[in-house]
Length: 296
Length: 183
Image 1: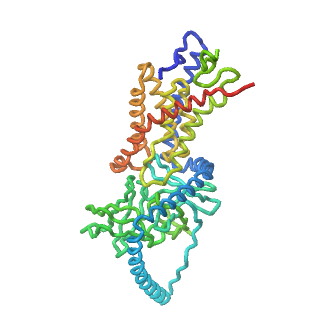
Image 2 (image 1 turned 60 degrees about the vertical axis):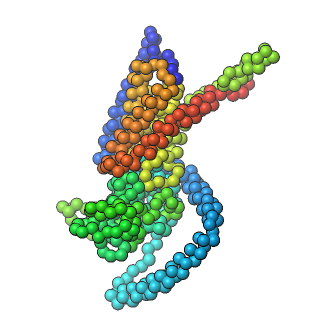
Image 3 (image 1 turned 135 degrees about the horizontal axis):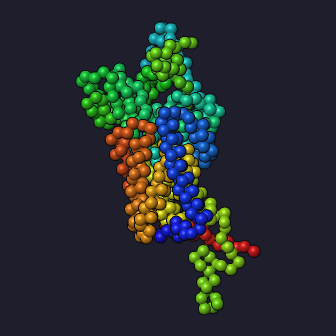
């Protein structure tokens, strides 16, 4: 559409000043924006409170939409389940039998583990999740991969806590509001997670690539032992994540490791649990520069 | 008069007798729709890669290009501030880029006062591409080639969405100027 005549102020002094002030304000605004942007590069936590409050403000709406979303998804699942029900049923029965056998074997292993641990005098207690909540939304239009969960500092959530879905690791808490928290997904380019291959002790780092895949970077370089389909689990190094939670499956082999797909795709995730930090002392130690000494 | 022409006492915004525009709607609709579009990308699936177009920015561009003169040049400051709260980009990014985009379009409009829709679309396409690429550079993460490739579907979607969005804005504009019954 053609512009209106508002741009031409004519001889009216008032219109001229109005127009001029508009430009001045816009220019100053751009400058302020640039300053804020610089500030948030060097002090990223400066605006956490503001964003937390904003996320709290919309959390009733996002939680409702998350409920509706998962509800509609399960309806679709039950409809598509009818398609080729017979052959699927037979296949599932076969898988079920194998799974039962494996389960029995796993129980035996677990028993043995318990016995061995008792022998060593090790104690292991179950972790209570800090909160169980929904993944309510994500920054779907930004390059950064953040998501929001419907629990915050009121429920005891703290920065750094790992987020797990029933399938595996999703990410960790980046900032908390009172009723919502922003989490860093594993696929974000700033996310690095120490992992190991589930079958043996090949250790690596899983870094987000920003395009939905994780880059597996081996720590010990040499002959690349990875194979397509290898499952990676958390190694527990770094102190944030409990060891043994599923992270990713290798889809492509590269020179120094490979590319992997997340086991727990946030798009398919509904409920997540927020666990306490595995070893707060270790996590603190990792964050502390080597020059500073740790004291209790 | 009605016997000759039934639409004689009405225009695109409704009957003119006994009815008038609502000042509240006329001011709130453009700003409100942009704010709403800023929040919208939060709601859909938590995707593993950026997929949704920057709806708030597209809405701002739409209002600016479809209805020039409606939003002041400084509109990028308050609207960008709000978008920054939800977009996931570092704080201040939207304030800076939205202000610059509005100033840029203002300059462009001085050069090209009369435009057809496809020229608007072209402008919006270029502005949105620059916005997304600058957003990729200034996201606070280390920019790498993979996340740049992951940007392509979002970019294509954004460009394709603009015509639909400008239709929606035209509808919203009619609603904005609708005449309501007054006594």
